[in-house]
Image (cartoon, rainbow, N blue to C red; front, side):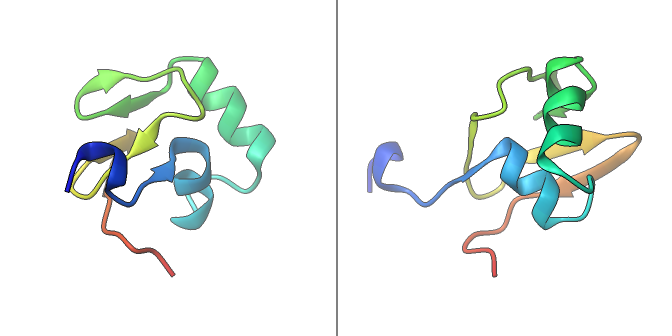
Length: 70
C-alpha cells in the first residue's frame, strides 16, 4: 500500500481526539506557535497528515498514532 493509500488523521484533529486540546482553535494556536513536535521536529501545519506510528509531543507529553481511531 502506498503512503497516499494509508489511513491518516490530521494533526489538529489528532490533538482533539487524544484530549491534548479542548478545541480546534486551541490546536491551531499551539501548532502555528511551534509548540507541537512531530517525530521530534517542530510541525506548524495543522493539516499535516499523521500516519500509524507517528509520535506527537505537546507540553512534555508524547502521543503515538494508532489508526484507525475511534
